[in-house]
Length: 403
Image 1 (cartoon, rainbow, N blue to C red):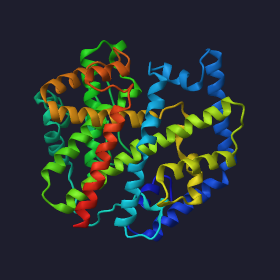
Image 2: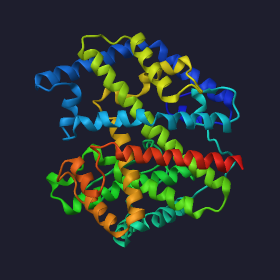
Image 3: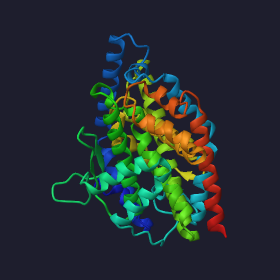
Image 4: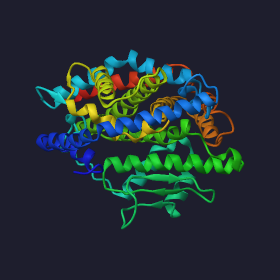
């Protein structure tokens, strides 16, 4: 049982193994909860000191000012997710039903609903699928992608001493992409994701002077996730097998759950703990665990058993020791879904705006760049539209597996 193996164990079909891994990890974190709460409290105090020293109204204002993102974007995200919480509760009920469980526990969230689908995908197959998926973005985009595939931009497989995960570094000569490819659907989507980052960096470096070439974190996940959305659309249109389609939809739904809902829950937790310390309260293990538990109840609903171990999860999320970072995953995902839908629906005008966005680096503030591409993140519309798609996919999965 390690931090790195935890999620793969939760994906197991063996429920006893999932429960054992879940309890093993969090029982260990529980031993250190007072220390971790003290560290988190100190981090909040540091952020508050820096915000006050620079005359910001709050730590949130101080953090978002760095990238010129209005604080309303943060609050709009949380409000929009709250107003669409019924979709998440609906998904939890469906997962409980399809897994045929009397009780759905937190350790049942990651195991696939659809089993036994053959999705072995070689790297060569993954490249072909990604290339076809981004066809709506035009031949110039495909040409750059092909150049990356053929000219050693990508370190593909695991190796001795190589770091885990995946990463794209936007060097000026050309981007370098690190993968640890396995022949899985997840690895195929990782390729699409990282090459989205790579082409964003390539086009910004090509069209902007160095001072404006590095795009802000707020838009960093947009290009990568837009590629994933286009790949999902391509694969769904390509498949003729009911169970393969259901498997793909299950994968898509999990992206919504983990990126839009879960990261917004994290963002709300971060906002609340900052406010608590700003109002003079010290964070203790008990207060932080209680807050985190209530948020899980709110987000997952009555059909989920909120196991006591989940109270400790905040300890293992490194982003809580950053500075209002996690909300950008959820806003970026919403923007990417909106952009991919516009590209597929409108064609050339939307593609032109999108390529301009990829080529703009940080020549404007990130909210303005997204507006130019056709997405207004100062409103709740992108989040609402993305969650309507989530609801539609839930219904389709239910129908596919109930036939």
